[in-house]
Amino acid sequence: MGEGVKSSMPAVTAMAHPNLALVKYWGQRDTVRQLPLNDSISVNLSGATTTTTVQFDVALEKDEFELDGARPSAAAVARVSAHMQRIRALAGIPTYARVQSRNSFPAGIGIASSASGFAALTLAGTRAAGLALDAKALSSLARLGSGSACRSIPDGFAEWLAGTGEDSYAVQLAPPEHWDLAIVTVYFDPQPKAISSLEGHRAAPSSPFFEARLRQLGETLRTVRWAVLERDFSTLGMAVEREALSLHVIAMSSRVAGQPHLSGIYYWQPQTLALMHAVQRWRAEGLAVAFTLDAGPAVHLLVEAENRGALLEAVGGVLPALGGQVLVSAPGMGARVVDEEKGKFNAESRVF
Ligand code: DP6
Image (cartoon, rainbow, N blue to C red; front, top):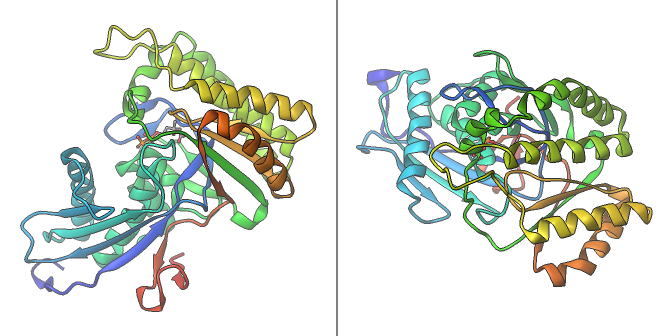
């Protein structure tokens, strides 16, 4: 392309869902290339979406980024621009781009907008630059924007193979229709995360329990992979719940660089713990439900779809006292290009 770039390169819009880790990514082998220390497994959340439009324009003197109709923080602009720079380098073009992104869900509620955001940006950006990357290359590139974004590229259930370099990407474990699960995310007042995932990853190896976690992960991955493929809910639920607790044990016993006043990272709020107790109670009463937690106070509740109503009723019983809100998802699709002419959410063209 180079010299031949026209001012009217087409705008491309892509959408992607955030993903929920069933086996977590926590701790990095390489902080620059965003290589994880372990494989992880996730499911896309159909109930939340990021939609991003990218257009390269020779008239621009720098990248422009708008998020939910406003100008984001300088740090967010720099992170997006660094990703656009990767795309320019791949495509061999010098042109800056206009990036407009919308989230269907509020920030800071415990659903990582960076995963859906960088998955949608990677697909829209590469297409707008005239590239047609395959699913592995897209996933690998999305990873450089935000580690977990690589898992929002494939449809449904994904496994991120840790790898050691360009072989670090996510592949599909099962399509969304493989298992009719309901994921009910209970979130509380949006609050800025005190300790970012990045700081959490960096601090993780300082936990005296981190090596034990890594030793355990081979078995956890085998169990969760098997439970997903066999649709064995009770095996999945217990493994996923213990896995989330393992991440939090590490976080709580980590030493955060530059913050000597912290004895550990506590992502839970009182409502988080109240829901964890409620889940144990509901299970004892016969509801096959399990929770998982990421690096924040939100609680993600998993059930098979036939139990969605019973779970929502149970959650409705405790929610007024806790003051939270819910977002309901099923296993979602991967990143895809949106056909703007036919309507954003109706007609989507698959890319792979
Ligand atoms: C706890 O480094 O992908 O969600 O800060 O959103 O870019 P961002 O997070 P990332 O770490 C995700 C950590 C996690 C577990 C997981 O998703 O596997």
